Length: 444
Image (cartoon, rainbow, N blue to C red; front, side, top):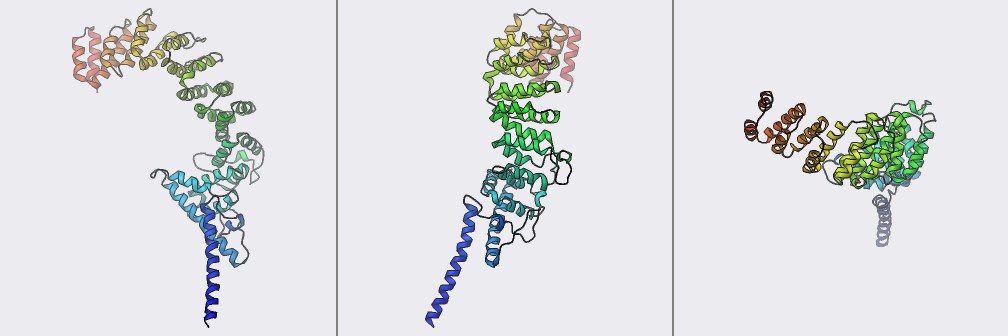
């Protein structure tokens, strides 16, 4: 009898250990380097959703193991979902969600997306989680992740492309391959037999943006060569936008600028200006290099002022004399000297207003210089309105003097109304000037 009991207990112990071992193996797979879920097992569902095929295991034991592993995957994804929802409230929450998703093996992505499809609201509600999964998938299988997004997902709101996340991640590691897939895919019919470009949301501008941004940062020459193959304006616009957004991280700005400048036929000098502005924020020492490049381009006259201002502003903080000479002697007739002096005084007043005033005092005082004096006085009034007001009164041109006096007095009154009123009472002005300035102090 005792022997029978011991044998029975032993059998139960072995079966118990075997079950526990299988459960811990599944959990270890999720918490370790991969999800531990095979494609066939992970795809088993009570009610398959989202179009991902469900594959049943064979035998009761296989079904139980598959369900246990699927439940572990579900737990991981629910945690990732909750962390994404709390991302703005809890520090590091999104990073933890991304780390969980990164544990999932490529062969388990279909099962993971199926689990999300079965959550309340499905893929539509959990777009952020779906995006993380697709981005992770594309790190090893860019075409598979992008095709899944294009054929299975609904078009996102706000005109975004359904392939945004996987295409961006794919382009981050291999922009040339991502570009090749996109261009080939444009020529293929969609899942409903209609051409893909005709599907609402298949946005060439957006997709090119996500491809060319990282491409310009990694390989400016390669990005330039690919850009030269584009013939449609929408695609060129997207590529230019992407390159401009990554301008600050680009190691070879001249090559990217050359690509952007090629779009001048499409009036894209705004993007040139944007690129240079972003890039100079992180690379201010190279303002002279950007100035030399810009002078070698055939910039439209109407855009020459816009494209050069960021270079001037940045260079002015480093070498006022060199920046001044470049700006006033640029090889373009537009803008005129008055406008150039005005822009120069505006930026110089921020960098060193006293040096600007000293330089301006040495210039012949014509109407153009009077306008520049007014701009400088208005700039100085932001930090020292008392001194700016006194200097504004010395401007020889009546029109520019009146404008500068009104601006500087108003700013002074905002800081110290009593002092501004007292100064106005002591100053010598014509009756007309005094009337206008008193109106400035009484107008709210």
